[in-house]
Length: 354
Image 1: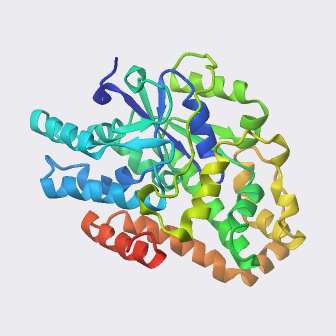
Image 2 (image 1 turned 180 degrees about the horizontal axis):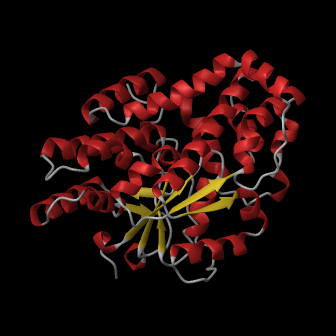
Image 3 (image 1 turned 120 degrees about the vertical axis):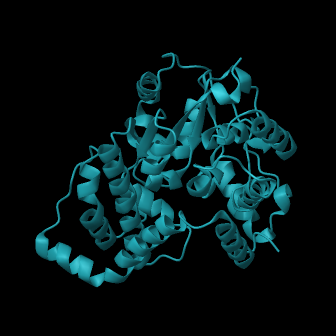
């Protein structure tokens, strides 16, 4: 039996639509690993809480308010969160121990129960999966230097085609998502190298084609037993009444969480072939191919003149993606109170809360 404070924390990172959820659920089958839902409380509070000597009751209230608010846009489908249990454990820890922010996170992790038969207390590692962490691996590493990172990457054209299918199709949207993909992985690779962070690169295509081989490679990296365990089925059924979610988002969540129950489809490794035009493929190659080649993908080189013309024509979405990434990096440093106020305003506008 392991107490939450004694457990290690490792991270699964990579841009959204790259297979982060699939990978975390496959790893969750291991007896020593306990995968967490996609929450953002650690990153949300890390800058201001990491060096504190203690937390006030108001600051604890802010944590629970953020967790509850985030669940409106990301319901805890597959998990149950017990805020009363969590608050009691937090207060007890703060009363009897010196303050440590990563330990606070572990206590919160421990308050999430999976909707399956897995016994949490018998696991020794929390596995925290979140695409947004990809931009902040350097800061997370400083908080918890012993943690390891599993970086999953998928062919950029597949990621981009998946990102744009749910919106009105525009070339500018494709360029914007291509630039986001490039910036996410350039940031991660640079951070890993600069800070000498312990990480392993996993290609989505290898994971779905040779799952056992890839999982054993990851188990070796994480330092756990090299054993493929029977699948632990998680209940991803979405209740339309859950968290008071508005009608506007019920269809979206039904599709999102319904897809998690589906088997791996090997014939969907290249979905972009049915979605992207020739010009859009050329633009994606121009922006992303060099970064992709650093992670083992074949580089389709674009001529200098053609590259200049593409960057000139689509300067607006390219700059827009850079501004968004820079904006998110700046928001990280703002006070939790201000960020929470901003998040409420945004959620009201989107219809997640009244």
